[in-house]
Amino acid sequence: MRIILNVLLIIVMLFSISVHSQIKNKKKYFPIWTFHKDSVSINGLSLGLWTHQESFRHTKTNGLKLELLGFGLLTLLLPNSPISKKKSEFEEFLKQPLSEQVNGINISGTGTICHCLMNGLTISGIGQINTYVNGIAISGYINMVEKLNGLMSGVLNNAYLVNGLQIGATNITQNMRGLEIGMYNFTNLIKGIQLGVVNNSFSTTGVQIGLFNKAKKIKGIQLGLWNENPARKFPILNWNFKN
Image 1: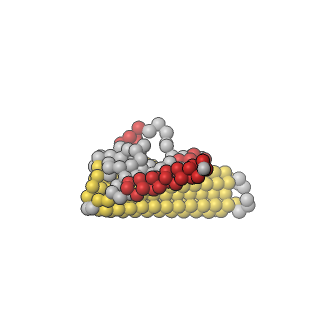
Image 2 (image 1 turned 90 degrees about the horizontal axis):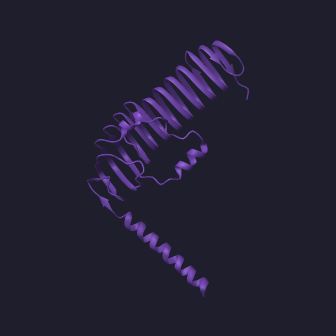
Image 3 (image 1 turned 120 degrees about the horizontal axis):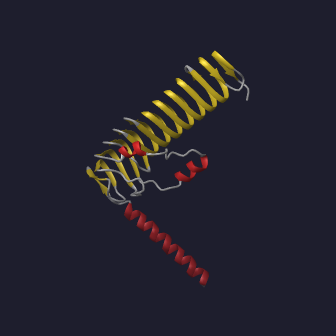
């Protein structure tokens, strides 16, 4: 009898959670509403002053999110990058619930700092920090994202995982699959091409093209004024195809 009561109690709890979830997801607004509201789905234009990094509102925008001010100015004051540097940190960070999802365009005056998923285009005046970007991330100065599938462009780009293209004066990435273009490129693991004045990597599978190229491990080619890899240090053309 006690077992049956426990089972019934669990069923009631699960039903309550399900109903609560359905009620939360029922709040839909068209064509305009504020993204400061908790648990809403906005189809059209979502408006607000700024986004809180630690505020989990479960808000979704399908259309245009317009952040009038934003906290992007604070990125200039960061003593260290908040982007994950180890796989364990990256995986642990991704377990946190998302605050917002934008399907469309996100525009912020100074920049968005948010545990957000951006599907489409996100633009900031000064700096932005996002969790996921599937599309294009453009920033006037600092551009940071945990995982990007697409293109990111800024004076300083910093990411944990990039599948696509990075364009900036300085690009710092832990894992890169694609093309990196900048004055100074540093990537821990890259499969693709580094194109810049100075290219530096721990492990490269592909090509480095620049004035100075350095790789602690490489399976590919280096083209530059001076090239360094485990096989040799050599000007103009260097290579290594051994594991």
